[in-house]
Length: 93
Image (cartoon, rainbow, N blue to C red; front, side, top):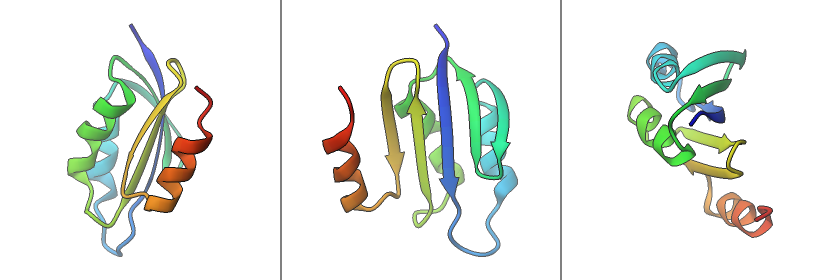
C-alpha cells in the first residue's frame, strides 16, 4: 500500500548537508520537491518509518516533521515539547 507522506524539515546550523537529507527523502519512495524544505513522497513507509529513515542524515538540533495524509498520522523529531504536546492534543483522531 502506498502512503502519501508530506515531509518538512529545518537544518538549523550553517554548513548543513542538504544533499544528504535530500537523498534520504528520495529513498523513501516516489517523490516531488514542493518547496526548499518541503517534500511529497508516495511511499510504502509509515510516517514513523520515514522519520527513522531520514533522521540519521540530520543533526540532533535539526527538526523533521512527516505527515502521512493517507492514514492521518504524523511523526517527528527535534520539535519542541510544547509544539509536540500541542499537536498531540489537537490532532483529529
